[in-house]
Length: 268
Image 1: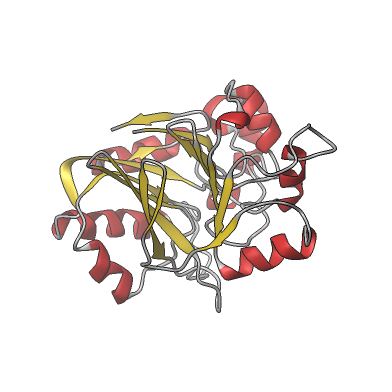
Image 2 (image 1 turned 60 degrees about the vertical axis):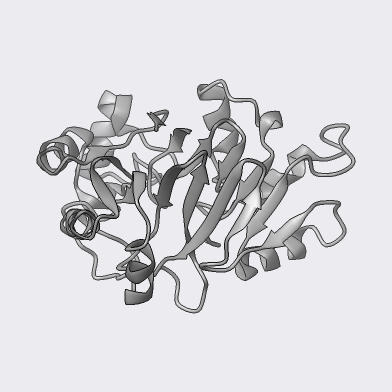
C-alpha cells in the first residue's frame, strides 16, 4: 500500500489561520514542512480519507486526480475533516456526472450532515460502525473506535490490502480498554497517529500530546501490535502545541517515530 498524507495539521492548520504564536510565525517565515493543511490522506490513489476545506488545493499541489477515487471514508463530523460542501463539485451542474462516482462511508453523525445538505442528490452513502468490518474493492476496512467526540462513534481506520495492514488514527484521544483490546489482536505494518497537542497538553482527552503519543506507541509495541520494523508516522499537529517540525524530529526520533508532513508518502 501507498499512503499519501495530504494534510497533517490540526483544526485550523499551521500557520493557524488567525494565530500569531511562535509556531505560526515560524511557518509563515520558513514554509516547507512547517506548513500544514487540515488532516487528510489517500491510499493507493483511490481510497480517500476525510474531506477537509483545503481538498482542492491539496490535490492540485500533489498532482492527484480525484476522479480516480472509488471511496471516500469519513472519520468523524468535525469540520476540518468533514467539509461536505466539497462533495457537490463531483456532480452536475459542476461536471456532467449524474451520480456520485465514488461511495461514501461514514458514521451516523456524518451521514446526518450529508443528508441534510443533499437530501435528494444521487449518491451512495453507507453507514459504518466501530469494529464492524466492510470491504471496498481490494480494501478490507475496520473502523476502530476513537475517543474524540462525546456521543459520536468516531473512527480510526484499520485498512488491509494484500496482507498489509495500516492503522490511520487521527483524532484518537486516549483509547478505551475496548479499543486497546481489539488492537492487541492485530499486527500493523504502519501506524499514522495524531500528535495534536505537542508540548502543550490542553486537558482535552480527545487528543494526544507528545508524551501521550509516545506512550501509546510504546504500549502497542509491548503487546506486539507494532513490530520493531513497523513504520510509525505522526499527523494532526496543532500550532498551539508549540512544536515546529524540527522540534518533532528531535523529540520523536529517539522513539523511532517519524513526524509526518504534507505530501509525505508512506509505502508498506
